[in-house]
Amino acid sequence: MLVVLAALGPFLAKPFNIDDPLFIWTARQIQAHPGNPYGFTVNWYGSVDPMWNVTANPPLAGYYLALAAGIFGWSEIALHFAFLPFAVAVILGTHRLARNFCSRPALAALTTLFTPVFLISSTTVMCDVMMLAFWIWAVALWVEGMERDDVWRLGGAGLLVALAALTKYYGVCLIPLLAAYGLMEKRRWGRWAAGLLIPLTALCAYQWVTRALYGYALLSEATDYAKFAKGFFGEAGINSGLTALTFTGGCLAVVIFFAPLLWRARVLAAFAGVTILTVVALSLGGILLRNFNWLQGLGRALVELQIIVWTIGGLGVLALAVADVLGRRDARSWLLGLWVWGTFLFAALFNWTVNGRSLLPLAPAVGILIARRLEQTALSGRKTWPRRVMICLAAGAALALLVTRADFSLATAARQSAQQVCARYGSSGKTLWYQGHWGFQYYMEALGATALDIKHSRPRAGENLVLPLNNTSLFPPKPETASLREVIVVPGPRLLTTWSGGAGAGFYAATRGPLPFAFNHVPPEDVAIYDCLPAPSKK
Image (tube, rainbow, N blue to C red; front, side, top):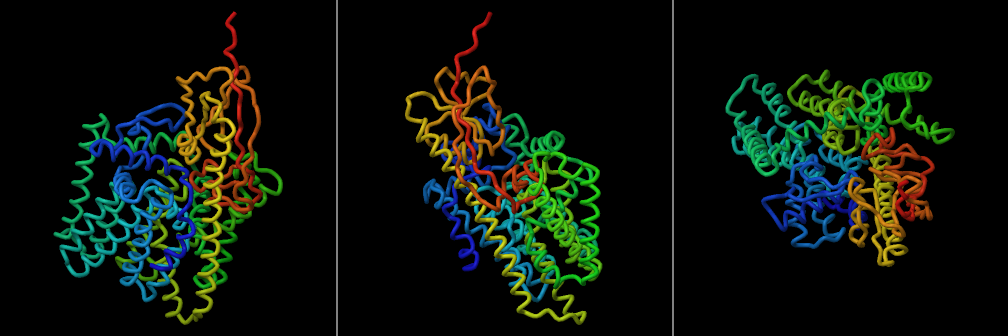
């Protein structure tokens, strides 16, 4: 617990960014109207829409935020502090589950903690770590309940599955995962399956309630949105699979550092050979990075090199699951295998885009698999010195903390850019319009600026329009409607970032970059200021 607090404590003051505002606004709505969490409008894609049509998550995290804010307030430190117990719960739950799977539960818990995806996700107020906390404890109680025929543990697991699904829709995947484990463990259906009726009942109730409130069953709508967005933003085929492998290896980078202890040299050489040949073939065929043509020269070469490194790590993650199944052939190995491969395939094939948040559920399973693999190699006669294990863990921790620090700097730059813009242009008495969303939107709104609705807003001559260039849903004005006044440059992360098309980093969506984080030259956070012009005369 103290290690978790020491790792995350320095990031408690992180500014809100990415999708944090959606959860905060939902919490504010819940405080005012507890029975109608999505009964408000929001400008998130450039125009005003109902919140129930914008969000792709159920409301449980919003209810928790509303409660926490009612006690601690709405500041960054207060809300990040309120989410710390879920990060602690994930690590304690991983340790609890690992005790049933290996002899090194502390190692499994620490490798989970020091993955970039876990540390970054734990510095947000989004639903991901909260869902994972329910997930890991549901699996732990389910495994213990199956072993002991304990109906209370099985029922508790079912309740936690329901909470996971009502926190983030991916939690629904626990139902088939735990059912598969139960069938492999018991070889037949029995009363143990009754625990899964709890989440099924809760989801049916959620469907009914949301349809009554909004005219749409939001669980079904989330599935439809994923299909639409996948077709609109996504990339099919081998390139999508390569991106998913790259993100898997980077988000779980600790696997690369442990690789020499997990695999023999010829296996590592095979991973490297397959990866290099694939990347070179795609590059020569014009497929690799075809959607990122702005990456050129040394920057492009650095991105390609990092794709190779992290793809090797991604192959290592999937191979760990396969090797565990082949080596042990028991229900527990199948549980971990289905957990890893199911999450990977969802992120690669079914989610609207590959991103770090979708791969977060892999972290505990991979931590346990690393511990089990080291245990297995020791039994086969290969010595694993404790000092080497600690060196690998320390290297993984250092990288994870550096990446988390870069994400912190990115969020800080977004807040600073909003503050600088409003300090210069927000006191004129005129409406200050802006585009862009995420943390920039949150702070611009807090400072009195107005989001531009591209369908209905009509800025007047002499007013200003602000566009943060490293953002989303931007619609630059036509030359006849606005002229560029200046570009405010705000320094962000320097040589490492989680979000920059210019550097090739797209932790939150691979549509921005093919890497979850990138070591590269990182452009500053530029903000363009436009002077709105009189409407052209009609002739």
